[in-house]
Length: 304
Image (cartoon, rainbow, N blue to C red):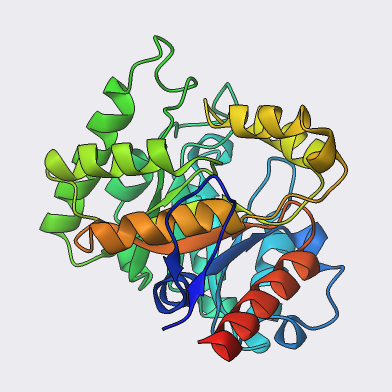
């Protein structure tokens, strides 16, 4: 079996087979405006890849549905975001779900609170969206929710994890009393240690939902730091800050090889972990991220 070697300070080697198994089945996040830069997604990604469509405040539902229709037509599975705090009311939520269902044949969704401080209407949490029963009514079968390995200061202003933990416990119980296929998709991070500590902790509390770990794709260091601060990435941001102090790495693009290697090794040591797949945030560009994944899988396959 071929082995992948990572940085010299990392004594362990990583099984190519295990690395590929974790990387295969990845998902990727895009926005309508970034999707417009890609002529045909089938040229750069395996068809049937799950693609999340981020709904940023200010993006119209028309643009969201148009992007969903396009991706479906190009052969991809689609999971649009439903940010509770930018949805005005139940009528608006009904319209969005109905349009995704009827126009793009969407059956999957990521439900999250949303990145605005003040709710625009009646919703402020993904739990309230789930309680409407509308996703089941319109035939949605797969519902993911957000996970926060490094906490979320917008939800827990006291720097604890009390509220996010309670929310996950509620969602676990919701999955048990309904027939929805549910999972957790996390914010991206740059250090595997807090990810595994969080995954083990929530598992010990009875959370068994599969975890899709958020990972930042290849990008310039300055770009990653900017997005990390804007998205509220926690202590693992220190990994980037340390890299910025190393002049030999400062001008080189960041690649997620190291954290993926750590996740692979950790998963191999704990095969019962909830961690099931990788979700890429293509902060350095969709095409750049897609090419990196393709090259990594091709190279590993040849060396196996």
